[in-house]
Length: 99
Image 1 (cartoon, rainbow, N blue to C red):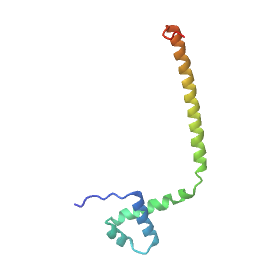
Image 2 (image 1 turned 90 degrees about the vertical axis):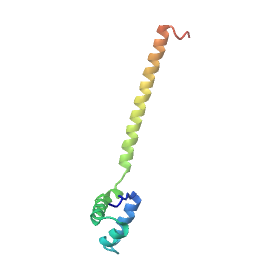
Image 3 (image 1 turned 120 degrees about the vertical axis):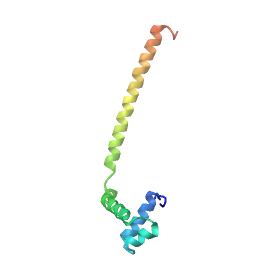
Image 4 (image 1 turned 60 degrees about the vertical axis):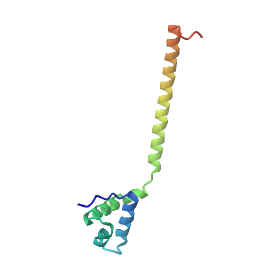
């Protein structure tokens, strides 16, 4: 039994582009690359289904991520402030910090 070959995303994309050019049949491309034709059909289907996402406006997602990041940052700074205040209070009450 032949060893299973793993293809990178870039290799898969090149093979799918070759399929979409239709210069060769899928059987020819499959035999050249040592891949079962059914796998090539799956890659082509996946590429065609995800193709519209290339043209979506990603700025909305970026703005949402930035807003979420800013919110988390503010929460962390607030937590740091609370913990610092608690620490200084505890040091003062315990007498460990003779300031």
